[in-house]
Image (cartoon, rainbow, N blue to C red; front, top):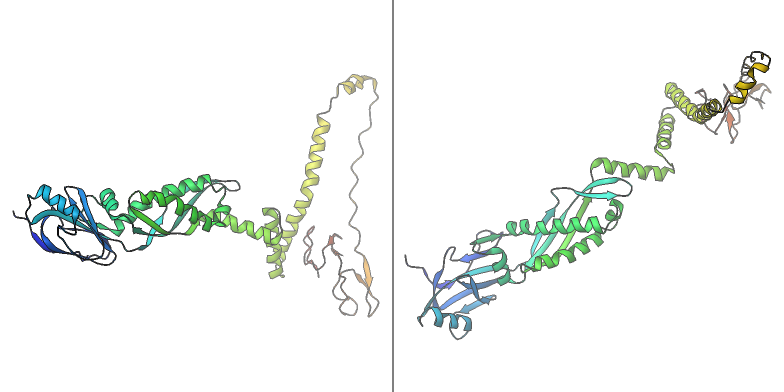
Length: 375
């Protein structure tokens, strides 16, 4: 079957995502000496014969002749026997900047965080490239393919990005917090690392952006919790929960049951250190050596049984203050006089609980020892 004889060679891509097109789509074509080669802006044309690049043409209209194409002249004298027709294939390469190419981490990257332990990072962003060396690009990536698309190039380059990102995160950045605070530096380092990888294929990296580096939702919640603790000035999780409970009571002053629970919880918190100290003291006494006492036991008279433990005294009565209106004695901290109903002046300092006498912070609505509602 005779090959097609070409007088005009050009490439108008039907697919806007195509970056390489071959003329003819398969095999080689007979090209007449004097044929017109039309290369549009942002394109270049690479002539090939038997897998070897012969010449590269930039944008413009070119007349293929032995006068202005020395490489073709040598080729013709070698392969065509001096005839005015030669066989070749032409690869047109789009050299426009390819923007908004996307990259991401389909599999999470493991990072040993000093505060959170092992965390799984995910990242994504965009980058842009341009085919800087068309001949190298066709030889290394395109090969004999008749069409090469932006998606195909994007998929290939993302593999290099993921490898470089994994190396950079695990060797340079020590924690998730440092990554979040240095995203611009991370993007700049990535641009340097992948530029050489892309250059091996004739692809020039123009821009590289990191849109986000994230961790699983439970880790993000832990960061938000730590931020709240720092804002409230609390040192541990139990203090934060206590502050939340006090805030709930302030919003619902009539919820006596919740106040009782809060008071009981705070009371237990105050009693726990004393109970542990007593228990540890008793255990220490039981572990002391008793051999001398056992030897002396037959010579000692019988000891009387220990007296019963004294009954704790009843809580002291709350201090009384005088009503400035009718002189009636009312408990300190009372908001109204029991004799005339007048409002009592409130002291700015601590006030005792009217039930058990425990000193309470100014403005407390419930006693943290017995749960009594104040006021």
